[in-house]
Image: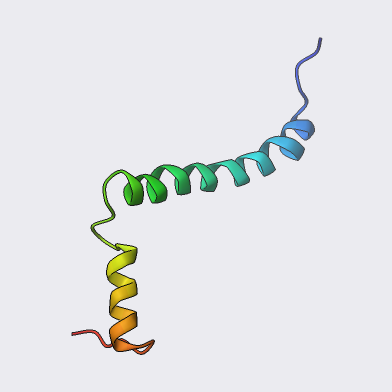
Length: 61
């Protein structure tokens, strides 16, 4: 069995890395912070309540 060629690694390795790195980052950083840490920075319930009472054009303080 021979070692993989550079062309094969570039053809398959780069696209796989381009897909897996952002997917891994999303699942570990985004979903973990929302479901495990409680999403103190952007709770969906708070945002939904603000939009319900103030409409789409919410103004910043």
